[in-house]
Length: 280
Image (cartoon, rainbow, N blue to C red; front, side):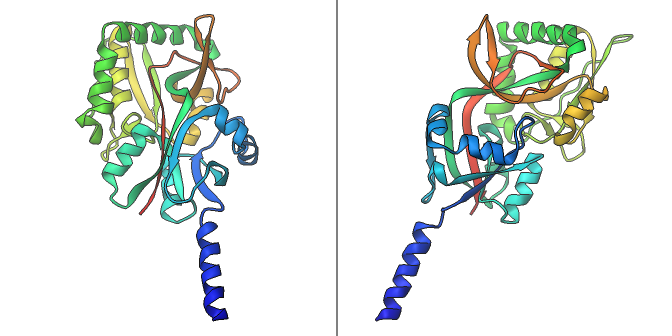
């Protein structure tokens, strides 16, 4: 009888403590260590300030979550496959892409943030004029409806499952802009199996190239090397994801990683939903 009771108590303890620590992988932060991030963002006060609503499977609570940093989404997936983490945190469009393409993956949680997250372009400060030209092109594409069409066609529509490649128009004797492509956030930043960049960001770059009458050259760069590629001059532009806050003086206030010497364009695509993707 004692053995049975002890066994039941053990089962209850294991069940209650199954998610005593729910380890999740996220992309590392330029201005925060893993320890600092966990100390700052796992408190109920901060969580409630940033998160509108969240739902996790099993017995997971926000206070159970512990974050581990990785240099890329690919590295996070490898960690998930090896059992180093219970789930990886990705933007909604990336999570949906993963769930469609990998039958071993399952949805472990959904979180809606109070602050929007957005994609923008990053430039060195000395290329502020190039950033303003990109801003003008983004504004024009937004105003004429082309940007919304690209989002529907490459992100939210059926093409998002297998993003097609887009050809860049070439102009004789025109300026060449080198843009880093990682392929790490499909179907936005995506590189096909043959090594050719495809998807939404490529399609947007093609339209910006036409608007600015410049030649766009894509350079394949590892996610963790984007900033060094930009600072070294290997590329002129990088893709960047950041959290946006309130609008001040007509501009979005950046809440996330800001690197000294780097400036960012106006956002061209945003969301406030992230997915926790795990294994079945």
